[in-house]
Image (cartoon, rainbow, N blue to C red; front, top):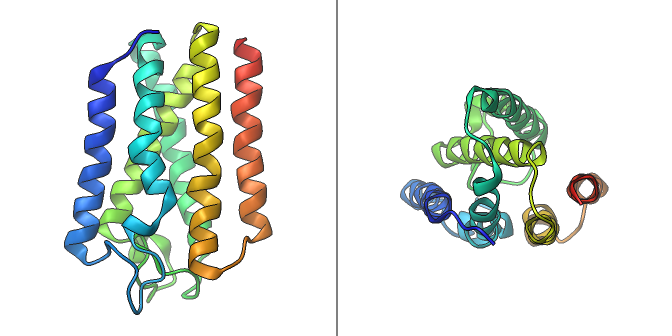
Length: 191
């Protein structure tokens, strides 16, 4: 199986930078007034441990070129919409490293610097995954990616909800099911 060490390193460094920014902002761990710190969020650990492997095995199969602007542009829009939806447009909600406070009720105004790092990371990650979905790859790579994404989706959405609120909102469960469905539909099409 081909491996891109530079994709792995770039992925790990991106998460470490985001975590460093969160720590600098005082959002590293859960504390009074912060329901969920960066280090408490399962998705950030998945970003650090699982997604770099996904990136390292997918990058060798993505042909460079101008065509990548399409998946990256679409992914940037999806990341912005997803984070806007996640914020909910209200001052209530989980206070985490991305939204340690919500004084304005506008997600772009309330997003922390580490939150903006995460929005950019998600845009890049989704862009790579969209490009990979459109690229041929051997079955072994398809299986690895589908399995790792299947681990990452609940870790990134359900664990934070449970840790911060003690419950699993139905909308979060549906989001995970959608992500898992997409991962396995792409895998089935590629196999």
